[in-house]
Every structure is written in C-alpha cells, then in structure tokens.
Image (cartoon, rainbow, N blue to C red; front, side, top):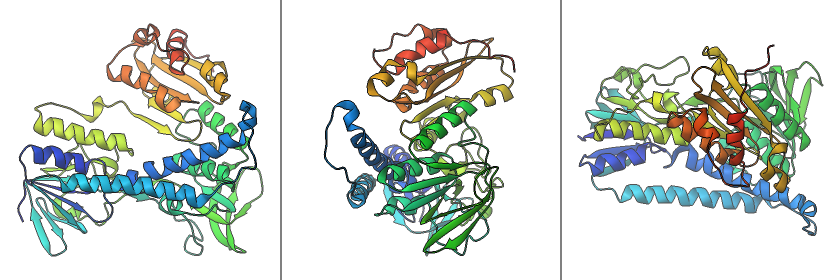
Length: 458
C-alpha cells in the first residue's frame, strides 16, 4: 500500500500531524499497536493528575478545621477515585479515536509496525510505503537490573494508575518526578510510604534548595525518605517485599507491602527495525535527531519521547508543530527555539523553566540570582500553603533570563510568566516592569526580577 506519509504511533504528536498532513491533501497511514493517546492519556498525565486531584481533596478535607470547616469522620474510597481516573482516560482516548476516524485520507491501522527499509513499513502481512515516515513510538518505564528483580512482584507507573486499592506500605524506588507524585498521592490516600533514592538528594537535577524544600514537605506529611541508597536489591518479606540498601544512615532494609520502580524511562525503539532504515540511536536507545527532528535516515523524522529531546506531552506536541511548520508552512522552526519547561505535580507543584543554577554555571554564565520563600507570598499566606520558594536566574552581562523555579502553590501556572518572556527573548527589565494581578503568585515575579544580585562567594 502506497501513501504520501506513514506515522508510527498515535501518541501526542502523531494524530495532530496526521490532521495537518491530511488537511494538506496527503494520504496518510497511522499505525498504533496499543492505545491511542500514548502515555499521557492512558498511563501518564491524565490518570495521574486525576488521582492527584483526589489526593488533594483528601488532604484539604483533613485540614478543614483550619479554615473553619467542620466535618465528620473522613474516609477515602480508592475504587471511586480510580473509577474517576479511568473514566477521564477512557473519554480522552475515545475522543482521540473519534477525531482520527473523522479524518479524510487517513488509514488507521492497529498492529505492530516495523521498518523494513528507508521507505517501507511492515504491519502484520501488510507492507506500507511512503517517501516520508514519522516515528512517534513513545517510551515505557525502565526496569533496573538490581538483585532480586525477577524474584518478587513490583509495580511500574502503568500498574499504579490501574490500582483500585491503597497499599499498606508502598516503597518507592526512585526519588524523582514520577516516584514523588505517586509517593505523596498514596500517603494522602492512607498508605505508609518510603522513598528510596540512590542520589544524595531527591530530584537531583534540580538545585539543592529545591530538593531540600521538597524533602521537608514530603517528610512533613509522614513520608520516609532514604537518600544515598546504594546497592539496592529486592527480596520477599512475609506477604510483601523488602528493599535492601546501603545508606549513610538508617536501617539497611525497608520492608513493605508493595514496591514501585520509578527510576526513569526507556524508548520503545528496540523492536522497531531501525537498523533496516539506517536510523541511529544513542546508547540508551533514543533516536538521534537534528535540530529539525530529522533522523539519520533521509525522509524519516522522530517525534516525542523516543527522540530523547523531551519527555513531556507539551514537548511532543511542539515536535509536531516544528515539523508541520517546516514541511507545510514554509517556516524554519528548530528545537533550539524551545524554552525547556516542565512541572513536578506534587502538591504544591514545582514549575521549572530554562536552566537550573548548576546548568547555567556549567554553560559559563556569570549569574544574577533572586530567591524568595513562599512564606513571603501573600497568595500562599492567604491559602495557608507557605511551603516552597521562588527562584530566578539571569545572565549578569546581558540580563537575559536563563531560568526559574517556582515550588509552591500555583507554581505550575505562575512559571508561564517566565516561559513567555524567555520565549520572546525579553530581558529582566521587561519582567521587572510588568504589572501582574494581585493577589497572585505571579505578582512576585517582577519583585524577583528587581532583586537579582550576584551570588555570594563560596
């Protein structure tokens, strides 16, 4: 079967690209072997954030008396919360499927796709060909090769969003973004939770003060945190599981009812037949792409998590936008134009844009830095949520904004004031003279900009 374009994967980049290509008059084949919507819709953003909303509701119910709200006994029904998450996921997936079904000139195929050459794809007994091929195959949880991994049951993020029970004691191996969201969520649902992290601090890619603030917040909710946990291993323990570790302090064994492995992601590229098309990958299996998302094979592009250039829904969608702009709009868009931004959806959330302080130093910048605790932000005080901090960094010579972190109430939304200015290439002065709405978290961004100063000498 001959097409103008073939898209492998119906995640967050594939369907909108199919929409643009078919609208431009092209015939397109879209192949999906599992669930339309990819990680975000089915096992990532949508179900987890729906469950996080349930966890926040439970948390606020427990704080009711602080706000003058008097309630009776508070109980949590995991099956109801899980059912709501499943419904949100199902509705989103069915909406995407209906959208694909409405596209003229689109052939939607279900099955395993495998490249058999630089312009051919096999799907079962069918052989498809096209001059343009787009890979949007996503990723999955990485399972570490630790002692005992094949001897005990364990959970990954897909298993966690399918749970209809609250673990008695959940041990989370991996103290980064996915692990911390599930850790706090299930602690608020009523589980005992212990986080085990090999690094000397949580979310080690963040600046140390952010990592420390996150740890204080989680421990304040009763979550055990074990960092510098080397030599991690798994074993059976009664009716549950035990995690052995060699930490600088604390007992060498943590026993619980369930263990979640949250140590990173790997791309779904190992069974794609990349070699047959001449597509190169890095050591972890991520597809190598240039600044316009072209692979090492002529006429083949890679979008989304599988290219290692962004592990988020918004970066996958922007990959689609870059390709569509370059192919269809006569534009010249590149990855270099994208301001890196993301959020950690603990409660409160962490919103991040651009570089961390460590990254900026490594890039050779002389820095201006401003930090403000959330305890000095009116919106946080009014809501009784003073955990966290705001941080802004800029280049001392050019006054170009290099990055920001907002860990606190509304941080995932307020960070966009920085993202937008960075995207527009505006300096500190443009932020310092902005007039945000009061009372908001964003109203402190101009204050941060005006108070930047060189960091203290170490």
